[in-house]
Structure formats: structure tokens, C-alpha cells
Length: 394
Ligand SMILES: Nc1nc2c(ncn2[C@@H]2O[C@H](COP(=O)(O)OP(=O)(O)O)[C@@H](O)[C@H]2O)c(=O)[nH]1
Ligand SMILES: [Mg+2]
Image 1 (cartoon, rainbow, N blue to C red):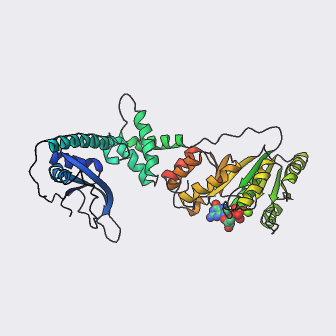
Image 2 (spheres, rainbow, N blue to C red):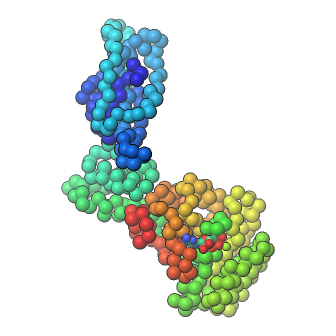
Image 3 (spheres, rainbow, N blue to C red):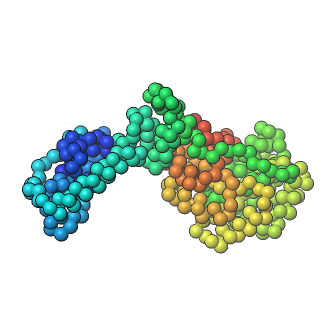
């Protein structure tokens, strides 16, 4: 171990700092901290510990003397001590020198005190959350795989809106977290449409389930709600992308119209409307968001139908970062809603909460299987919360 440090380990930052304070009072310089997992066997049963590296300020005098405070990084630790067991290896302590060095040291100590209280008050460390109720809320969110930055924001809101009587009993943690998490999702309010038919235009990367989702929605509208439905597919690739939709359309006897150019699209919609269609679905061939040319072509189709609701279809099996970057690439096209597919194949919705908040659009539908028309349902914030907290389909 580096002689400059004492290392304190504890399950939480708060507890580690408490140990620091017990040993040094406020005379400690926090040089760094890290979280790591320790114990367990083959990765199972390990626990998270926080390690805080503290420089003895008296040894710091040596550093100051040798030409300013040295910037020392925490030692590379491969094996952490068991949680709760502080490694307080004694270090050599040179005598304190008087004079300017001491003043500098006092100034440093003042700074350390500030840093310490800042650390303790920071809501993003679960160990430093001011109340056990908040810590439980934070833990629950993390155990649902919600990103720490989102858990922080939610817990901060819970804290802010604390009732005058204090926090509720621990048994309400689940209820409160669900309530606040739901508020983070955009409500899926019906979109205002004009006099004409409602048009749902589905866009998104290849293979996410656009065509299958349209088949589900169209057959439900036709069979369950007895509404007159029209299907339009944009076959810009002219590679028989129409086939799949036509097969579904044949089953529930809905006509499929193929449109090859943006200027034909509004005419086709007009025709559908004249034939009495109340609901029109537009299926777009999958486009890689990397492909600028195809994206600009798709934009022209979307612009041709300003009255359409544009739903961006995203698969829940996509990595959160990729999901955000896909959504970003589709943003210039202008979409109103997000449809989440393949929930049956994804582990949980928790990791995607951050991406969904960044996207900032309501989720209109969630699909959870290949079964047409069964595996789809309208989404609302409460249901999304269920998928986050229960980690599986409701
Ligand atoms: N497991 C699962 N598979 C789905 C779901 N939705 C679509 N799929 C499958 O995903 C594949 C691609 O779907 P498709 O509708 O052709 O995607 P598109 O390229 O976006 O039109 C097909 O094998 C679908 O059966 C879903 O919710 N869950
Ligand atoms: Mg398709």
C-alpha cells in the first residue's frame, strides 16, 4: 500500500466517511474514493464496498515542502478487504513544521472540511442520503436496474416533496417509488387529429417489429373494434418488402396499397379516406439510421403527411446507449410517440428508463411477442412502471 494513504472501506460512502471522521476528526484529506465489489465466489455473493483514500495531512506537510501538494492517485487495489473492515495501516508521520507551511495546511484543512460536507450532502451517494426512507427508495430503483442518475433525480424529488410529518413508513417505499417514477414518463394522451382518418406512420430500424406491430394493431382495429382499416407500405427498395404485410392483410381482409414516391403518399391516403377508412397504417421499409440518403427520403414521406402520428419503433433488446443514438438519428424526422417491442426478449425495462426520459416522447404501445394480434397493449406511465419494477411483463 502507498505510504501516503490510509484506506477506509465500508458498505457505503457515508459509513466510510464516518470512519474517517472517527479517526481524524476533520483533519483528513480525501484523495479519492472508489466503489468495488468484494468477496463472493466466482462473482456470486459479492458485496459492494466503498473505499475512501485519505492522506494524513501531517504527512502532507512533507509533500508541500517538497514543492507543492503532490497529486497522488489512489493505489491500485486488486483485492479489497472485507466490507466494514477498515484498513488503517499506520504511516510514517513527520513532525509538523511552523510558519507559512502551517498556514497553507490550515487552508487545506478548511477545504477538506468543505469537501467532506459536500460529499456527505451529495444526494448521488446512497450512503449520504439524509434519511433511511430515501436510501430504501434509491436501493429499490437500483435493484430495478434504473441508472443511478435517474434514481438520484427521482429520490431528489421524493425528498423535495416530503410531507410536513416526515417520510412515510418503509412499507410505502414501493408505492412512493412507483408513483414518482410514473411521473417521469410522458403521459400517452390521445393525439388531436383533424376530420380525416387517423394515420399511424411507423418508422424505425430494420427488424424491430414495425410490420408485425402494424399487423397486430390493424387486425385488432378491424376485428375487435370493427373499424375500417387501410394499410399503406412504402416499398422504396422494390424488393418485395410488401410481401409480409400482404400476407397479414390477406388474413384479415384489409387492402394493402403500395406507394413508391412521397408525392403519391397523400393521394393514396386521400383515396383510402374516400373509401371510408377510419384508420390508416403506413409501414416503412427498415432504414439504417446511418444511411443519410434513405433517412432524407423517409423524411419526404413523413412531410407528405403532416396529419399523421409518427411512431418510432424501438426494440427493448437494444442496448440503452444504442437506443438513445438511434432515437437521436431519427429525431430530425420528427416523431410523436415511441413503440417498444420485444419486451418478452428483454431482461427488464429499468436500464432503458434513462433513454426514454432523454427521448422525451410518450410510449404509445408495448409489444411482447410474435403472436399477431395478441402480443400488444397500449402503454401508459403506470404500466411502464410495472415493467420497470416487476422486471418482466405484467
Ligand atoms: N419476440 C418478439 N419478436 C417480435 C416482436 N415483434 C416483432 N417480432 C419479430 O421480429 C422480427 C422482425 O419483425 P418485423 O415486423 O418484420 O420487423 P420490421 O423490419 O421492423 O418490419 C420478426 O421475426 C417478428 O416476428 C415482439 O414483440 N417480440
Ligand atoms: Mg417490415
